[in-house]
Length: 630
Image 1 (cartoon, rainbow, N blue to C red):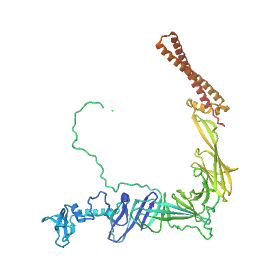
Image 2: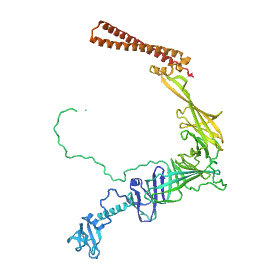
Image 3: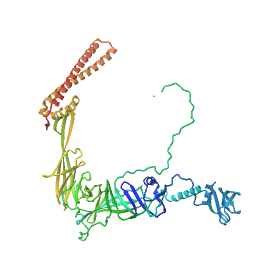
């Protein structure tokens, strides 16, 4: 029995069995694409109570240079086989002649007729033999076995030109036992990845979930009566140069020096959903809701499903045939669902004003599901399509399949000012916790005579630890957080309008190591310009100490301004004195320089006072041990 196993990452493992009678040999030819030759050679295995008497061979791309012209065979061979010993047989059945081919020539039959001729070196000398007409050459027998093989290879190349991207791997097996034996030949080749296509058939009577494997045979070999298995998983695969004839590049070593020694020079070197609605929707209607109609899929699967490690294997019990460069669809499972629910799912990123009709699907199959497209049918009517994600057994997913135009959503969002929530010291750091409240109103209006379970997605990307609650009037909603989204579920009745209020409080902590270098940030962020700490009595002494620092810094700033003015005046006086000697200017210059020296001395004293005052503030902050709440 022949089997083929196709993985979802584009590799196929082929197994073929061959029966060998006792004492017999069997030549096996595997047609493969040239690009896949390396994969076959790297993975080929033969199992069974047989012997491999001829090991796998394959033609190299560069093998042989002889080509044959199929339109003018004798003349072409006469030109290309010069020097080859041959025996000639003639149409008039005279005795054959033997000799060595020299080449071709033109023979004159009469004044009006010439024919091509083959010229040989024979024991009797150089002779010419007509290629057509009475007594012409009928058969050419090549005496050299190697030349015969070269001609055969040239013919094989002509054959391969019919399918230029194809080649073959050949080997021979022998059964040397006295009983019949079976050989199993196994190899792997790149193949088109199989795809899964799902069908979700929902009705008043039952909910059915089925999967079909789409298999493409893009190889050069017909898959005749093979057992097909499709596998979900990612085995490692890569291409190699196994099938390429390569001569490693060698380093060249000169025995004789190319250059003699020259003169020597001296130089330098550098969410799970509530509610119990059926998965079907009467809004879409059915086929006249005929009680005798049972919307059950005709795709009946009998495959064997199993799991090996992270692989899920679907194996067809009956053989199928897929010709080369053809495709086929194979049912792989069919499951009755007991927990499928229809919900309306709203996410502002998907659509600003409308929710999507969705199916809350739980994987009730006994195996994992591969990612694939799913067609949804409601009471026999096509309702839409969706993507089923990869799912393990028991996992759930929300599958949006159609936009619901009977329900409209409007969103209003408001941001409140950032406020300090608390301040405390921890491990030598000054920690400030700030909070911002974001209020979002979702107004949801249902104009249909239909009741829904509504799933509201509220984005919460700023902080996954944000405090989030939601309510409809006085009823608070339970939410589930995952991947930056809070999900809230509630019932939306027919012809109802509800307002879901979501309050989100984002909390952020800023931590500064308490030292002289952090004073600037602490003062300007929390004290300066009537900052939040100026309103806290526990920080009154700290604020007063900061005011002392500010007074010193103001004196430093004023002194620096005065020094700058005096330096500019000194420059002008020096320029004037360079042109004209003037006693008054000389006295003014001396006075400016004395004043600058005095101010620089005071700046040194003020800088020392500033550092001491800042150190006082830092010490006071370090002693604050109680948490201060706002």
